[in-house]
Image (cartoon, rainbow, N blue to C red):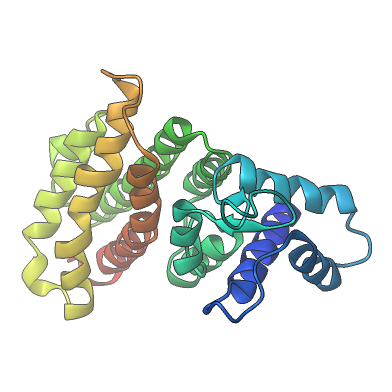
Length: 257
């Protein structure tokens, strides 16, 4: 999915949120009013079919559904589904709105190129309704973040001629993650409050949420090893893990001695 598609998707979601009635006295959601408003906000070079493709995908993947009620079950009326309401509630950072999600992430953390590539693919899969694939990709993005942090830590220890824990150079991501946790936990008293609190709050998110969901998909024991909600949770917590990793990398560079 290209960036322009992300932008169109965000415009549609934003316009639906703006036009969603908050009382029975307001006009109901209708196809024409939303699409006309979106068309006016886009450059003339954007093809109508590109807009309609994104519009249709929001129905195909279950964020919108046709009909107002059983008396008006057909177009042009439509409504926002429960999953769509979840996306609109957190529109400024929800993975269902990748353009805003990536802006939020960019505002709080810098990703390694490999992690960024996997994360974008995870978002593509998520908005396309391929949740198992999305879980694997965000898990890979998180592992890339952990490996980058490990590499920075190892280089710093070597530059200080300090011993590098053998487990920190293991090939298994769980062993590496546990080794890093033990290392940083041993220095947690030297952390600032701004680093200590997210370390205690979000490090476990990698093992207990993102990695666990990825493993459930990679070693499936059922037809549906993950749900949209579990993948949604992994994507929501990922920016905080990335921000924590950035903070720990900065501490390693400037404070580890």
